[in-house]
Image (cartoon, rainbow, N blue to C red; front, side, top):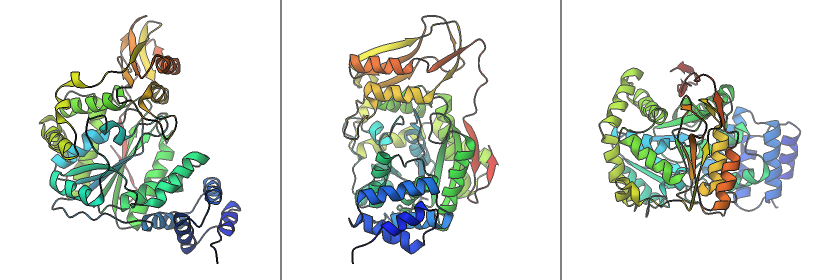
Length: 442
């Protein structure tokens, strides 16, 4: 008898709950091709509107995890998996992952591509000529054991249910559902045999979670899911009203991350990377948080993380000479600037507008099949708090064409607020959540 999904769709539509076995059968049937997209889309919309309780969310996470294979990595050092919920200019992985490896952890990192106004780690890394992000699970595990890290795309046989469901959610307006977000992220994290899952949850207008309450709800749900599946999970909440750092765009962000690894990067990027690495020392080895942050800062400032990064890049085919010769990076076909129209201080730079402008310039995709231009993006010349006068350059746009340059500059109109007084400096790291889901002041 052919699998019948409609009764489950109708029950969830009407506010009912589903048993774990029912959710498991539904996911398996969809991956196996026995449930059409239109019925699964209806189910996802019902979940988005009606929600899921924790047991249903855990069942969905487990069903997605069981849809494919898992990756077991043998390593003498503790395995830590770092994940960001996404933001504008968020090149933190390019700094935090080698920093974690320099501190004695192994970091198996499955990453994604840009989505909407947010960038993707894979697109950023692939701006380094030759660097491969498509690795089979055996090569991925070998690189983690040998170099202390690997950053790769999710292969087709790891959590295939998530790949199928995410594409459907993106096309049907069902992305903003807390149970679906948590199940998607945690099923991928659980597929790799990490000891610790470390979440960087972005908060603000450039992030998926606009306020601290929604970010906290996600963090606590993800941590509880990790506990249910036997995985220590922690979270830090970080600010994302303005772009992180001063570069938004693939090659631009790689160059800024390398500058940070050299001790020259922007303070907010450095703070987030050190916070994540310090939290891993605190969680895994019980190091007091203040001392853990100090050790992480020393590893960054002393060049240990940069050395790890330099050794690792060639292991995935990347040309490491680009790190030392910035003139070799490609330049965008068209460049222009957003200038100040009045005298004062930069009071705010709206992250979402900057992310969307970078996307229009060619740094992101307007359609799934689009290519990205590694040279495209936006550079912030004057950060919030900086003084400007009429005509001063606030942002530089690097675009793939004159038409895209015009579109990006138009999107940046209104993205900057000029104030009579400098704004109060925003906190970068807001708080942490421990493995029990308790909030801790930072």
